[in-house]
Picture 1 (cartoon, rainbow, N blue to C red):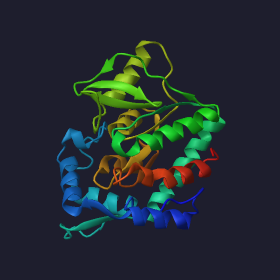
Picture 2: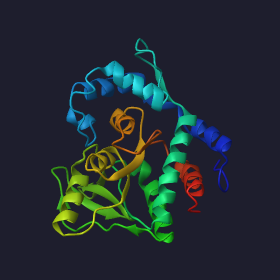
Picture 3: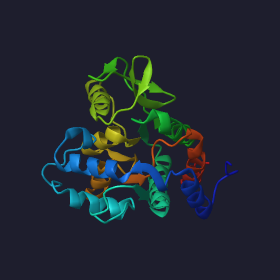
Picture 4: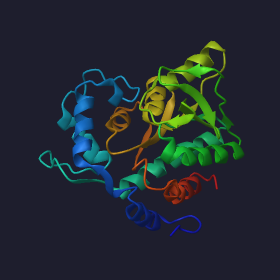
Length: 262
């Protein structure tokens, strides 16, 4: 059942575990390890718009970061079965994210919101955009006519997304964010003060030197590495596509309350 109003920390932790946003999540261990290996092997799709160079070529180093920042099992010999996200780390991440949103609201900053996971996180970003606008922030309107090799870069409910074949598209790529920032620069428009996003949208923005915060799953290690290196300010660990987007409603309520944006 939904949590009425704004959940306490303890209520939110319980909700995260019950809905598998955290705790025993749906992503299997073998998928996690495969993604860590792909990142370490330099497969760019797993770098999420970041430039990692040769700093993360050992998958065990990647696993160590994920155990620390996400709460996956830290045993390299555990290779099959269920993996985990520590719900306490999820809420810690939401608190850090809330602090950055509060700063944006207090400074009436320009904010761009984007998602490569519209099936799960579109409403999380939309609600955040609405709250920031009410607080006096400028929600960046992206230029028209943008596209990448994967599709068109659109803005739906104040959230930048990739559209392909009349469908909102799941993407890890940083190219859509690159298209937006390049178009803004060419038009002589100011870049965002803050990007709130996920996947390559968040990674590329951080790599470009913009304050970048957002969400990442336990099989998306690049953003947590970027947070460890300081390229991305906040990476909140959570399952980014659970069975119903309504499960994220208490997450939204907690985040906005913590940011003073209710």
